[in-house]
Image (cartoon, rainbow, N blue to C red):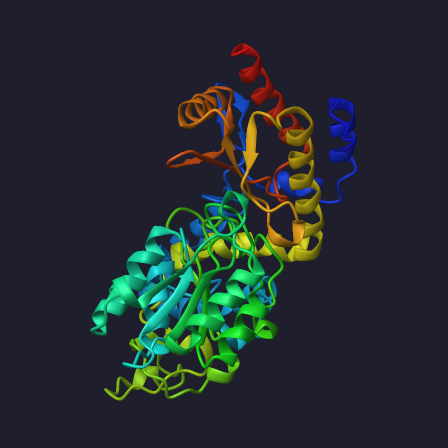
Length: 425
């Protein structure tokens, strides 16, 4: 593969980038006065510069209006979460009534399983991918046990059948065909956290529904990373966090999608006051009348100070556009892959699929020399001001995020790895 690895070329690409100005809308971490090279948006996104102002405005309204800020102020709190409907729907490819910002990811996952995992003796199982994020395991196993079934037999995992542990489309289809008759729910990631593999949501939903299963997705590593079309994909629900690619801060409010065909459903749910119809909520009746759409799964009033940074981030996504971000993402991650193949093919193993259609920003890498060499390299990069992340036992993840990463960042990462390698040979 021909790839230009000169600084002049990388700088020229960055100067010509139509999204180049968006980097300035984020705080770039510094160490010893030097900007870090940050490739960890897959774990925690950077702070939008507009976030502080929005949080401070809510603090000011709290100070000035106190309880009346629910209905006064710049952004009245009573309807605050509604401000996020349109921009969230645009990011995930949904109708506004299908999305809501609420809770945290695993809370939302439990709420969705309360409604969409209704096991029977004939259909007790949940199908998921092997090596999913631990929180998904904890939630799924506990739900199976809560309903009186056995996680050891009723949690079915799809094994990786490709190099690096990724899963072919045919393996997913075979697993659904083989186990679908026993499954009450199919629940996979949108992007697999460890390998960075992106799954075909629409095809999985089609196959699952054909077997009579409910289908949901954990989009923690997909939202803000890939252009999603959740409504057209047809899944029953999806959940995500917003502190990774959506840049809304540590532990920030998560999100939830419920397909519009369930908007006025009588499916069982765990109800809370804020999920009650807004027009009669303050009548304070004991009977629960759910709001239409995803809003009906809310529990409590929204945490305003946690929603404010998400508003700031979604404004940036709206200005940039997911299609433009995806084009730059493909270019940046492809550049990283090409440089590794040219200079480090005998040093690093790539776990993430080579096909851009099967991945997002993230490349997951393993040092061929083993875990000790891998940890040595990761520590070297950290000391060199390059931030990725390490997942046991031996995987490094680097995510060239198009809102704030550049071709020069990618080149400096690869050159730093080359220097580490040269010192060991």
